[in-house]
Structure formats: structure tokens, C-alpha cells
Image 1: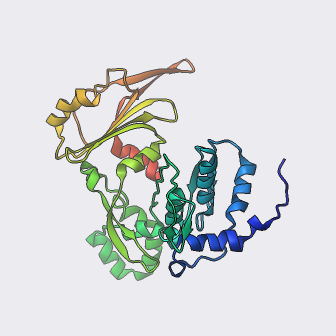
Image 2: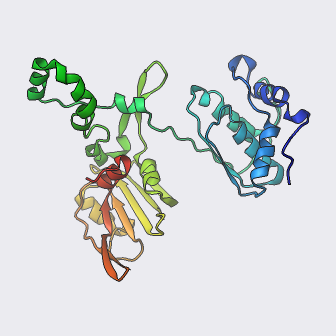
Length: 320
């Protein structure tokens, strides 16, 4: 059993927190208050699990000490531990992410320069920027009829109540996620907030990755050929259903091309390769139903499903 009180020089946040962080960066490049001692964090993680395959979650990543500690633990015993860090601060790109990358490369740093090369092999860092409230507001497109506009001009006292209670539901409907643009899913863009002052930048949005998360897909394989107009994803849903997802540029792979690709993409629903097949855009593929018996009743579910309504339903929890 581990001690409930930890004491010792390695727990000193000045030496193994601030000074360690400063060694990873040029001191003039970083201004981060009170980073934790990496050894204190290691003690915490080891008290939670001694498995080489543990997965640690830190909702307040800060300077990235938890990620750094997990990397070092894997380096020490050739472990396969994972970590998930969550951070909303602007320093994520200047401190948190670079620190984890540097920790993977080597343990020896001085003034931001590597003194040796000792990388932790087979380490992959994946980071995701989640849509913020500001991003949502920046992409709202209001559609007001002339009748409504005239009404507001005559009855200004009802304007505020309308804005607060109805405007976002009625006038902005369809702009929060424009499924018409799913016909060219690899070109989907949004105005993304880039700083606290409200500046925005037009950026591509990864619909493929977003949908995988929405349906909870355990990804088995991804075949991507954007030039030819498709991304093909295989995986398993939380229900255990074998799932195929085909994203296509409908200008490059239309009705005729899709039928030609059907064998290549395993899109014939009557085959038993997959339980569920998702595809974006309109199509004329022959469909089929999956039949299950639940509590003595026969349940029929569509095997080939369109991505757009499923995306909307899961994204905004509404039936379409």
C-alpha cells in the first residue's frame, strides 16, 4: 500500500516542475505558473494503476505534466500506457502539446534544445479541437422573412423576446450543420475562433472523424483516396455490429460510379460482410433489412443508412 503522505526532494515543484519545464523551452518563450512536479504526478498515476496498459484521463491538463509522466513511465518499463488530456487554455499549442512531443523525443533538454536522442518508439499523439460556443455563433446564418422583418419594425417591444426564445430555433435552423454540403464532405468548412478577441479563420472540418466519434465506432481500418473522392472506414459499433462507412465526393462518385464501385466497396447489403452500412448522399443501391428477434418480436432495421440524418440526430439530439 502506498503512503498517504509523500515527502522528499523529488516532489519539489520548483526543481521538478518549473525548472524541468523551463529546460524544455527557451525560458523567454514560456510563462507558466506552478507546474506540478513530474515525480508527484508519477506517484499519483502509479497509485491508480500499476498496469503497463493503463489509460489515464486528465481533464485539466495545464502544462501537460500528466502526459509527460506517462511518456516517461512507458520509457522506463517499455509500457503501453495511454493518456487523454483535456485543455481549453490558449497555451495548449505553445506549451502542452510541444511539451508532450519533446518528452517523447528525449529526456535531456536544456534551454529548449535536445542534448540527446532517446525517443519512445511506437508513440502516436492525436489531438482534436472541439467546436466552441463562439464557433457555433460565428457560423449561424439567420433567415428572416420580409413579413417577420416588417413585424419587428412595427413592434419593437417583442423583438427581444423573439430573439431569446425563437430566433436561434427558427431562423438559424439548418446553418448549424449544413447537410447539403455533405455532398462534398472533404471540403466542409467553418469559421473557427482563433483567439480570445474573437478573430476567426476559415478551416476545414473533419466530418469523417466527427461521425466516427458520434456513433462510437471502434475503427478497424481506414482507406482514404481524396483525389478519387472517397474515404472508406470499417469498424464495430458499441452494439457489436460490424459497420462500413463510405464517404464520397458526390461529384466524383455519383449514381453510376457508385454502382461500379459497389463490389470494390462491399456495398451490396444482401452480403453478410457488414451488419450496418452508412453512406452519404443520395444513391440507388439495393437495400436490405437486418432482422433480429427481441423478446419474441421480430425487429427489422435498415441495413444501408444515410449518414446525414444520423449525423444530425446524434449531433443535436433531434429526430429528422
